[in-house]
Image (cartoon, rainbow, N blue to C red; front, side, top):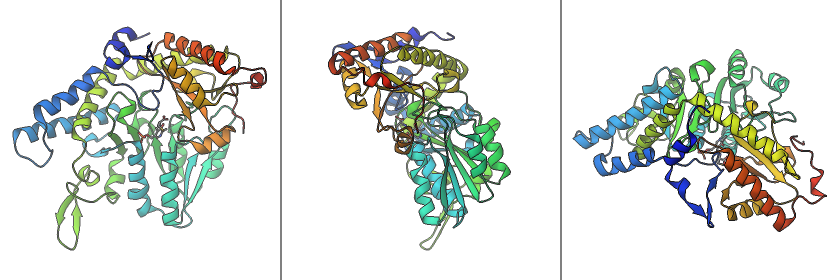
Length: 425
Ligand code: C6P
């Protein structure tokens, strides 16, 4: 292990609490992560010492707030190695808003009837619904790349569906359900050959592995602060400068203009053009502290820790009779999310029993209903890990499954039929 998990845990006040009299075992990190003291302190410090609106005021507080806000932009840019952080990093509310910004800001201008939008079978609703909406509006058509039985994209299907009509490829780098990691660098290469732009949904990848937008050569990357130790209500949309410059604004209002008359307006330069109205100043500043925390650990070390704990979890869960795991078995091929079902027990019931044991997981369709249908299930349970999780947390999950079994008899002989580790179509 390249970092000291026990030391890290001390930075997270919430990890000291109990749930139903049991120590909290937080395994719902793909939904949102917990926040370290450094992030909470940055938030409180802002409100206690220099709360002011940014960019507008000429007083000391406004200048301090503006400087801290812009510093977070530079930090976010450095974190993903943007070539021009001061222009290419747009603060949004979350990944969802970033993708909508591209669908509407870029899509309205660049899509027309007969064009194609290509996404994949593993996408989160956030990377499906905005494209369906813009397709309806423009007459473009949505298509998706299928997955194989381990949850990887079928490369031949991608090549077959990419063509001169494809104008944008919108793909997640890491699935929030199966954890599968897509080779987005290779996808960028083939998409660009056809003249298409590539948007990466980085909601799950950016928090968990090193991501370098220049190396990937992606055109857009969207991610959320709250999944990487930061506050809720802040997201980042990265876009290549030339592409952002050529796009129309998504929202109109204060801060995003150059000149306004009663009849018409001209727009501000990047990034303000895309940040209409007062932004989420406090949370953007606290997000800077979250980035600093992760940089202190090193994203290579974060990834290394997650491979280790994910493999430990896959191995431990595989030994539990009645557990069926979906997605890759090798943790090197996936992020820190393990999705499974336990016998014929509904994941919602399972989640409730685990909660009684202090273990927090997510159960449901994980905002990926088409993928659930593709897997042949209505819902699954998901344990997802982050920097503060230990193998003991995984042991607690496995023990809690025993409690569920005692209550529901979930690993009944009928239910034990599932072979596990396979995506069933
Ligand atoms: N997935 C999960 O439990 P927002 O809500 O905008 O911050 O993130 C949306 C989103 C987009 N893409 C992927 C791959 C995601 O995983 C998510 C959020 C959470 O899986 C909440 S549904």
